[in-house]
Image (cartoon, rainbow, N blue to C red; front, side, top):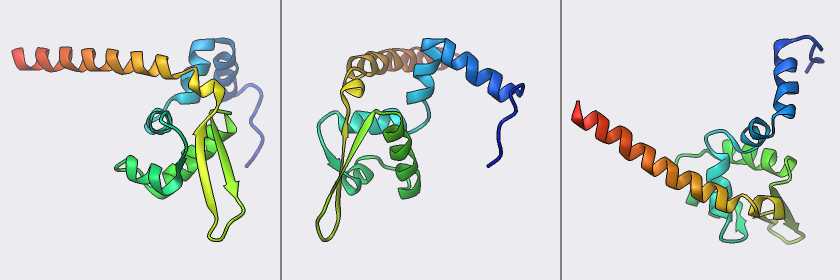
Length: 124
């Protein structure tokens, strides 16, 4: 992969994201699957297969990619055990545990908003 030009729009946007804490945070946990993965891990350690079963609709490849990103961002800890067959556990890091009340509140807001929109559509 080539080097990103300093004056590219993508690079300028990336710099802005690092200046704004809210946007930075949303970029770290944003996307279709990351919050769902984090939410499934709030109960404790899970193996890859357990995560896969807990999240319907996610492919193995997507789960692997998202777990790698979350690990790189310091939100998920991956533990590999020297066993045959190999065993890998995933769990939340301390900084990710701090997010639990935030995503619980976001979930409540999402439910309210969804009901509001559904009620508006039903009135039309």
